[in-house]
Image 1 (tube, rainbow, N blue to C red):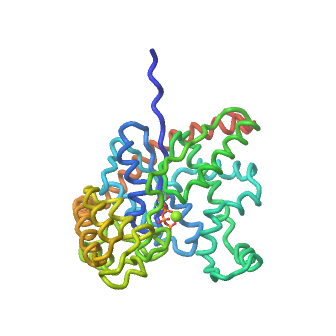
Image 2 (image 1 turned 45 degrees about the horizontal axis):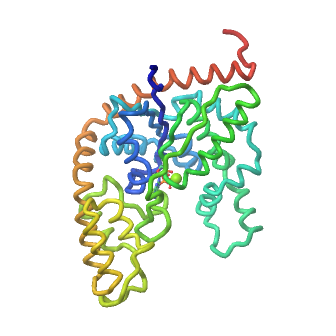
Image 3 (image 1 turned 180 degrees about the vertical axis):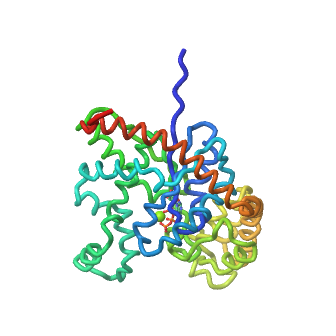
Length: 349
Ligand code: ATP
Ligand code: MG
């Protein structure tokens, strides 16, 4: 009996800031758990970060190291998972260029996540009408509109089967699957269709109650935040705005303090008890927040410690990234050679 071939994971993050609790819940946790079962590649997507940070290359460069430190801190093991830098794998840019011909402008404009991010980028007023929004959208860099295609290049270059991501990335994987089908139909079976792996808590809300905690949204608790900063952020968290007095019954659904407890408190019975009490009334926000601060400190303490240890040797972190990128390049080069052959672009050996 032959064994099933080992499957591949590709996922990554934009170096636009250090990683936060949302990244952990949405993707890092699954990566850490699966790194021993799958051939795992983790991409620091610096080219994608530049699509909305073109004027800030120093920020992107600095955050490459920050993101790599976060990987090490949460327990991604560079001996089993390959860390690599997107812009140092030029095959990815070339693949993206070919894939752009397989996608219509209308399809790119329809991508719901890109649409949502457009609004944030252009600070569209909440009451903007369709025409105003379309006008604002036309001012966004073309690279930003096309980043789902570049992401399809990343995923397919590694022939990834599984992509552990948060909910906001679901449309990207769908678009990748469409590109794969179109490519294989047009040029022959070369690319592999990926699947997304989206956790149960698929989108961690921000401390301000916004639907998504995001690096660029100013509502994040970072994995590297010092204990006093975490405590302060938890204290200031949005809760149920109708829960004014301690004796009032409160709402648990959509209350980010409880969503964080669901994600990070290992004592699920205790969480259930707090929820019941909150719903009945008589439980103050400050008590629930105190519990959350404790739980987060128990989770973040060891991560912070590991991060500090690795941060002492930034040259070693860069070496890990270089080694990983060298290994990754063998894979991306092999896929690109197959793609070029299928597209009749193999002019000479
Ligand atoms: P930016 O605001 O610059 O886009 P981000 O915080 O959205 O940053 P990304 O690097 O774009 O982070 O996303 C990396 C991964 O983390 C993706 O898989 C994304 O789905 C996941 N992720 C990010 N924020 C959250 C969140 N709040 N909840 C769950 N998953 C998240
Ligand atoms: Mg994002």
